[in-house]
Amino acid sequence: MIKPLANYTIPQTLFRQLLTSEANSNILLLQGESGCGKSRLIEHCLGTASGVPSLLFQLPSGGETIASLLMALGSKCGWEKLPRFVETAVTLLEHPLEKATDHVWLQGMHRHLRDVGRIGDIDSRLSRYQLLTDAWFADANQFDTPLLLAVDGYENASTLFDQWFCDDFFCQA
Image 1 (tube, rainbow, N blue to C red):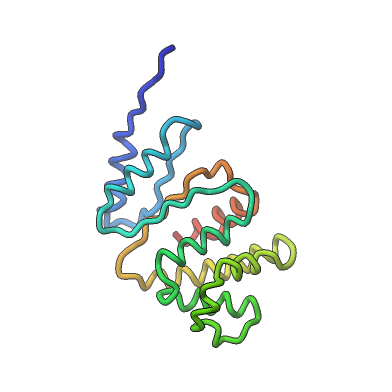
Image 2 (image 1 turned 180 degrees about the vertical axis):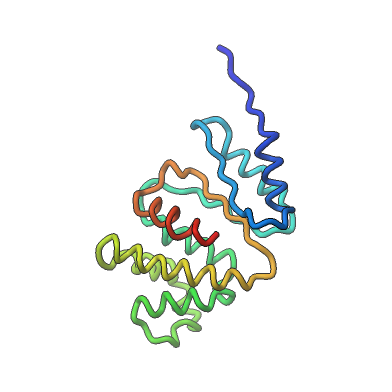
């Protein structure tokens, strides 16, 4: 049986351009059949991006993946660099605003983010996640260096994640 060899010259070139370009293009989508090496390509590209903070998020099947991604982003960046995001989470959960600087409360952030996604119907949850997304990008705009986010395994995305990621997250990225 003949197996085609993957030629990743173009995606690697596009990734390097993404890192060095002064243009506003900041999204690179890689699409391919299962098993063609996208995951290895992503890992390789992130590995070559020395000096640029990056996060590879492997999208799990099912579960509350929005909360998991937001948690991973917060952990990578540091909650102290995300004051608007943390205050928004505190407000959405109707906790006292002092919790935003409480280290014990921040240690439970994954649970808090999951709780945000458990209240109400899908439109209500999407609305709350949009508020968190807006706050995250408001904080991220203050970063000295950009953060590379790679989401792998998108075929595992739930309908809720897909709708949020495409409608809210991509619009701001």
